Amino acid sequence: MQGRVVAITGANRGIGAAAARVFAEAGAQVALLARDQASTARLAAELPGTAIALACDVADAGQVQAAIDAVVARFGRLDVLINNAGVIEPIARIDSIAPEDWARTMQINLNGVFHGMRAALPVMKAQRSGTIITISSGAAHRPLEGWAAYCASKAGAAMLTKAAHLEEGATLRIMGLSPGTVATDMQVRIKASGVNAVSALDPSAHIPADWAARTLLWMCGPAGDALRGQEVSLRDDNIRRQVGLIA
Ligand SMILES: NC(=O)c1ccc[n+]([C@@H]2O[C@H](COP(=O)([O-])OP(=O)(O)OC[C@H]3O[C@@H](n4cnc5c(N)ncnc54)[C@H](OP(=O)(O)O)[C@@H]3O)[C@@H](O)[C@H]2O)c1
Image (cartoon, rainbow, N blue to C red):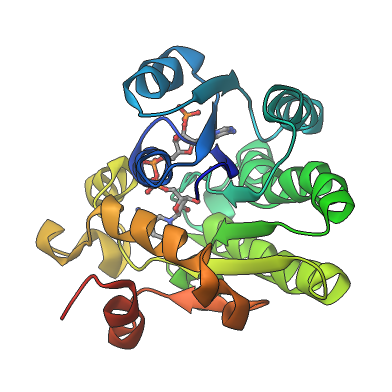
């Protein structure tokens, strides 16, 4: 990662913040994107090397384009984009979801990934190299009660990863990471909802955010070549072993 430039959306807490730390410690120049610039700026200041914080709501295509433009203006290139920003809400049955809440989830979890790819692809294609990893979920592949918006948006994002790989996979590495359940604020909100089997999980069942971050770093190394177009599942012990998370 020495000299590599990495942009991470939703980088002020949870998996995104852990990834910012792991990539910076590996020598990358990291751009932290999140809506709240104050918290990303605090984190960026703690990281080794050169890290920058950019205010960016992934729901807004113009803000994402401006953030990627700012990364390229500052560092001259973009090697990795981690599409991590995401929301679980609304947690509600379909007939009680407000249309604007449904649309907001799509705008962040699905359109936000599109906005990131749309801004990053021309830069990476011109370089003839680059890696785009989108954080997926088991919910992209199986329905869960009360999570229709989340499941549908994550399923769309997983398909977008496949479509982007189809179009650009000959030159770029485009992949998904399904981390399993991770101990972040999102799981705290899921537990508080009391809806479906995920909320009933004991917090000890969740992996630390650092495990997801270390897997992202591993996917950006040589191992990533064999993973093009795929969704890596961190529930898989074989993957955990290859990353070095378990013996
Ligand atoms: N935790 C899990 O068990 C789990 C499992 C599978 C997949 N995932 C996925 O992993 C990713 C990260 O989740 P997490 O668990 O780390 O959640 P988290 O702790 O709730 O963090 C979510 C991050 O996304 C950012 N974000 C939300 N909306 C945004 C927007 N419109 N623009 C920019 N940033 C936005 C948040 O920052 P602000 O709100 O401050 O902007 C925050 O940094 C998500 O895509 C999630 O779906 C999580």
